[in-house]
Each structure stands twice: as structure tokens, then as C-alpha cells.
Length: 99
Image (cartoon, rainbow, N blue to C red):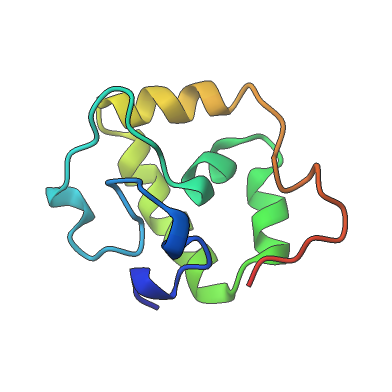
């Protein structure tokens, strides 16, 4: 799966995409948007919800990339740490299925 196949691609402006094979070469600056799926993955219920609503390949990529992203001292890591304290935005929409 490439980043152009992401269900959020058309409206996403996050500089770090877990589906981008070169994501490690990209910079995330303070105040920039973060990937919706990385933000959801960070939440306490995120992994369980995403495993049910995402295509297998996208979910598997998140499980690989997330630990690497969170291990780097960047503004993105800080954003993901803050996201852990908020409820899932997917979980607030019963019946919603993401491609």
C-alpha cells in the first residue's frame, strides 16, 4: 500500500505519513498537522479500534512505524503523547467504517 492509497490522502497535510517509505527523511515541525491514523493509534483504545476498521496492510504499517516515530524526540512525538489523553475520534462515530 502506498501513501496515495490512504483513505485520508486527499485531505491530509501531515508531513509524516507512515505509508511513505521515506518518512524518516521528513521533518515534522511544531504546529504542523499529524497523521490522523498515527494520532488514533496513540490513544488507549486506538489499536483495537483501528485493527477493526482499517485495511490489514495500513494497520500493519502503523504497528511497525509507530514505535519508531514515538522513539524520536520530535514535535510529532509530543503531539502523539498528548493524543493519548483524548478519546478516539473514530470511536465517537458508531458504525463508521474506514476503508
